[in-house]
Image 1: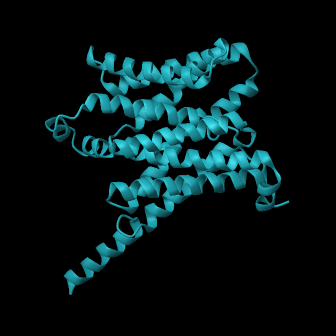
Image 2 (image 1 turned 180 degrees about the vertical axis):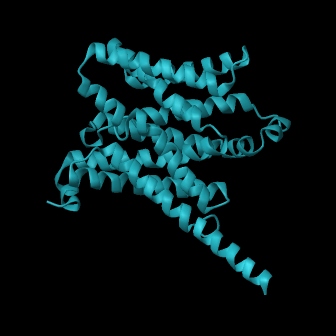
Amino acid sequence: MNFLEAIFYYDFLQKALLTSAMVGIICGMIGCFIILRGMALMGDAISHAVLPGVAISYLLGIPFFIGAVVSGVVTAVAIGFISQNSRIKQDISIGIMFTSAFAFGILLITGMKSSTDLYHILFGNVLAVRTADMWATLGIGFVVFLSIVLFYKELLVSSFDKTMAQAYGLPVQWIHYILLVLLTMVTVASLQTVGIILVVAMLITPAATAYLLTDRLWVMLYASALLGVISSVAGLYISFTYNLASGAAIVLVSTLLFLLAFFLAPKQGLIWRRMKTYANTEKGEI
């Protein structure tokens, strides 16, 4: 049975397809603001910092979304507190906090369940997504999309010129923390598809690819979301057809799309820029 036939036949594959597509959309859209703000390392930190929150939520018997959001926000606040109250710069405090949070989460998980559960949390398993996880992902996607629509202008101004945003009276610090909360929510939604370790790739790679294709933010948002969906669906196809890890397949497809844009993008592509430089050189010689 091929992939298209299996979609109509298997309920688990339908849930996996819908969940992975939504993850591709929200990762792509939030990723645009992450790379424009130079927060790629912070995105990596938050994605790892949710692990102890997930473990503690499981121990307490509460939705892991709650623990993950709290854990991610606490880690982000701790990073800012350390960098603002010592000689330690932000990148160093990020390295310290996210590795310690990640290590603590691994200890909690390995102490309470089998390594199989840890593997799924770290690397994802979208083909085993439950109905509750699917609806939670769709809910998070709706919140993220609505937040971007409502605060688009504020995010636009503060992402490109923080000084101007402050001059306009925008609460820049609050916008930053709202973005961190949205980033944490997206990370939680991505646990089943690409896992904690690979989620940063889905946050950065589609957005970076879109960044090479356009100079307009709204176009970049749509392009990044579309690239995220293509990567997720194609990765799911590869995972199902060849029995491979879903998260790794999705990320590698996304990387392939980035490489195509890197070499072939109309304005920013390496090949086109080299050809343009060569043409200008030829004209100069003539």
